[in-house]
Length: 139
Image (cartoon, rainbow, N blue to C red):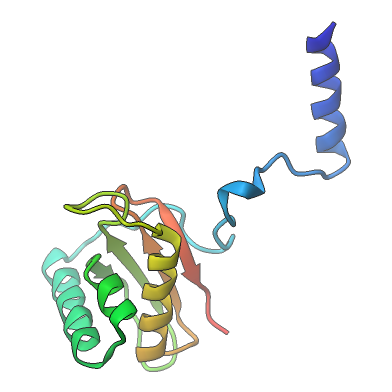
């Protein structure tokens, strides 16, 4: 008797527009960003961009920004002074040491990258498995 009632409840929730998403797990990523890390067609370039980003943050960033930037492995994408896409691969949820607050670290990376480059660009941070953590889709 419980199984049919559960089916009816789920159907009713879906038909009325209710969400079955568990909000306690954190926010969903923005809907207009790639949920998987795009293919890296130039690994040397993306690794170099990550080194340059980490170096800039080491010289100019706050302690939190410096700590977050150490997680950046590659930066894939194309952008100019006004717009573009940056897909940031990290070792968050992996790597030699665990990240205490993965979302906060990812958000710090997005904010730092967006402050250095254009606010109009799309910046997305991915974990060690290539899954999206968070992003900024421009203003």
